[in-house]
Image 1 (cartoon, rainbow, N blue to C red):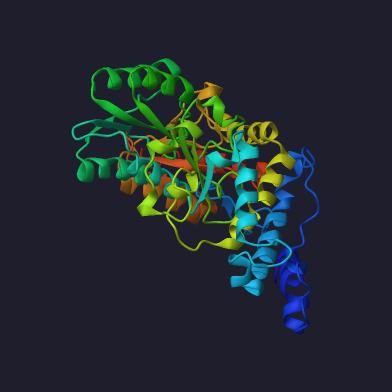
Image 2: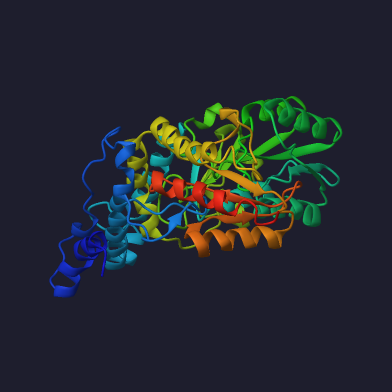
Length: 433
């Protein structure tokens, strides 16, 4: 049986004007949803704002967030609007001002409002990976033999981009392992050590929240440490923006990339790039994209047709973010995370991969079972949780100390979802003993 909320979405977006064959008034499909006032959504009500697959405890919100209903409905309207107006919309010739130019400006402004910067320091990209690849691979202040640094907890795609600087631009790629168990002091010591022993370092990749373990790094201190040595940092904030309550300036970084389809709950295929206005020239133009002004951040994004309807929906997603509130979101997500972690503290053989210091963890937290030392065993745990307990998690490899299982509650997650995980770990904790 079709979910009633899905029936409502399809009826509102499609059934009336499209299936009936009636003419559609200009702008009718683009009608904005009801205003999402800041602070108007209580976190206790969040699961009711999402339509999710029943019968599964989905604790893999780290891949991307499903859109809340109001965002999904706006996206459906926006896709139909673009489809109906076609090239007239994309070429900005509609007499009422609707079109790609206004949409892109509105999207940039919404993201800038969310992260606390100027809209001309923001570019919309196809993903966080897209944004970070452009920042890394087009970083200009690099000479043959200069060093670029990353750690084992950085994201695979970003590590590949750093390695590309080695294979294509002659950089010396330096890798180091994040200490585990980690503390603020040990993290800072590890970065200080690698910077001290790499005198020709020019670029440092810093991941705010590791996609592998969920460790939150002290980004501002690392950025300052690197800057004092003449080293630039590129910050991967894919799991930080809209999950943690902060503004970009709190990081102190000049170059940041993230995914808008993760914690902002926008449609899939959206990311964002931040370049401090004074540093635009230090990132090269993307593939000679001379359409936008050369001095603009827009020229740092590859040219090409994007999902216009998705970009059009960014302001609604940002409004939803503020309707919940950044501080309330962080507290709620931490609460869900703490609920399952605290429930398994006395379970033998369950190792939590991040420290107890609240500054060093967020919603994303990984665990290991005693005896789980190989990727194959981690995959076995992932399958066991899903097949026996209907719990969706994901295994993560590439960690110096060994693979882990990542658990990520989302805004749609209920207490019952995380309680199911705790019960499952009590049942399966000795599977390799």
